[in-house]
Amino acid sequence: MPTVTASGARAGAAAPLPGLIAGQMAAGRNPDEVSREVLTLFDDIEELLSENALNYAVRDHG
Image (cartoon, rainbow, N blue to C red; front, side, top):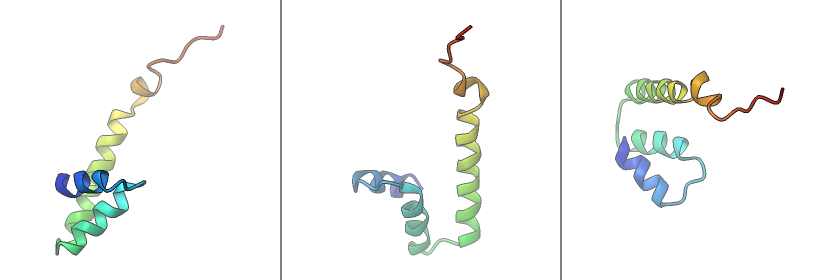
């Protein structure tokens, strides 16, 4: 997957995920396998944006 992501970024894709998925499908990959990998990617992103990360620079206004 990184190759398609990198090429999508170089191409200036505004939203790289649809291009990533389409590129993987065009490359002949199994749709079930691609969808599982995308869901894993979403889980990783969610973990990065956990409550600690989202509240990292929040200031107390009280």
